[in-house]
Amino acid sequence: MFEVLTGTGLAASAGLNAYIPLLILGLLSRYSDLIDLPSGWNWLGNGWVIVILAVLLAVEVVADKVPVVDHFNDVVQTVVRPTAGGLAFGAGSSSETVTVSDPGSFFSSHQWVPVVTGVLLALGVHLLKSAARPVINATTAGFGAPVASTAEDATSVVVSVVAIILPVLVLVFLLGLVVFIFWFVRRRSERRREREAARAAGFRV
Image (cartoon, rainbow, N blue to C red; front, side, top):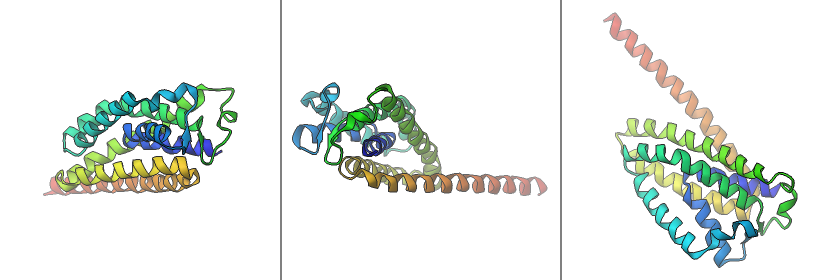
């Protein structure tokens, strides 16, 4: 069960930032004993792969904090983040970590399941992020973009590390995500009703 939580946390993190969980997997695999990637995923710990991920992360961090640019970045990331989520779930759920010593047993007969699961999880988080960002930009005149982006990056880092070291805490993140989704949907419904009421009042005048 822990390997599922590890993969879930990493995939959800990829939905916020595609490169953070992959970079963390590579760095921890190469420079620590916290995670031992299986043979099929050892490339994540390659020095050149780490450098490339770091460069892509730098570009993503800057682009995601600029209003308007962040929207185009989200469009591009609609493909990148789910792909990264699939890779992160596949690598994380099949790795030996400080809490998982027999990771192959859960997905032994269906190796494609973790990758597809990661794609869907990351896509869901990405779509929520993409839907929330225009609202944040509109209500803050763009000033909220860097704040929201920084919070998302920090969350991605924390959840990625927690998913590897203490995966049970991923449940807390998932609960928070459900609460946020409920609040966001409710808030959008309220704003829609307010706009409709204002439009109706304008017609009456």
